[in-house]
Length: 367
Image 1 (cartoon, rainbow, N blue to C red):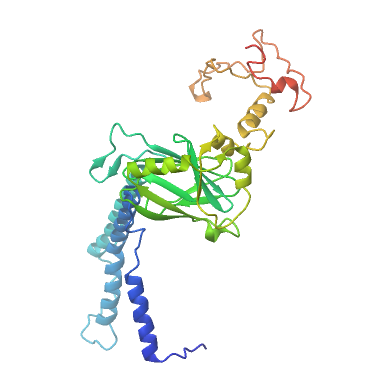
Image 2 (cartoon, rainbow, N blue to C red):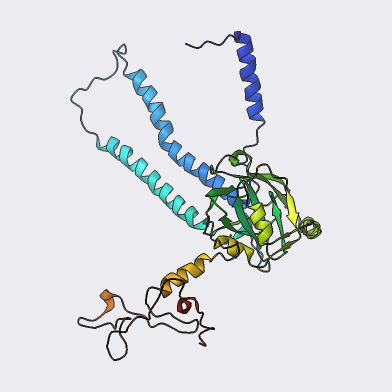
């Protein structure tokens, strides 16, 4: 058995100090600075309140029944033959049913309203998105163990530093270089996964200027604990000033620089890149930044070409084949493996996935 050598007064002082320290903490999840995170916090409060409508009465009644029907209380009614009460059954079943219905409706509405892929409908409560405001696009790549932010419209990039204008919708496009991570700025919005070879999206906004913490909320290796970044919310003038400062930085984010940046490192100092190679984020998503490395889209196109099925051109409109339940009885559907005369079409000879015929594009074939 473990015992504490501290005196009772010392233990009380320690508990008091801990209480004071916790009292001064800023619970950023429940007190965020972005409207999306604010709506998520409200959803948590509403859900908790609805569930407490059952939990609190049950806990109170447990104590009341235990006290009322204790063995020493001889005045309590004793009814051993009692087995049913319609009124009690209605209370027991109707209250939880109504709460489940309310929780289901609340969750359904919030799930669609706060869908991370869906552009936000408002900047803040009672403040719709201005019709003339364009969302700021930020391309995010999780690396080992740092974050890369690319601003394609501004032509700059940064490492471990995210800067966004206040009260402006931000459209994040996210991917990963190696393993799965989770992009999370508690003050702005909920978590969204980043995965290699895939792109996810997140729409959010920050309504207050300030310095906020961002992190990876998914374990991704030895340097995970230091995989954090600073998020700065500034006014439009401050954002333009930051972009100008970034344009004056040394270095350009191209394929060579990215491959160096992709190497594992921890606790990287925030830095900027004055230029960004065109289309590099798309190549990161398709995992073809390295020279002579085929992109995933090209590999999938090659797999489709090798399947023997006819290849649609960019301008061709393929006829829609009705599904089985839409076809009339006895209606035949022409097979893609037969020619106009109904004879089986022979497949072109192939010597492998790298055959010249499979590598030709429509332009090279003269189409």
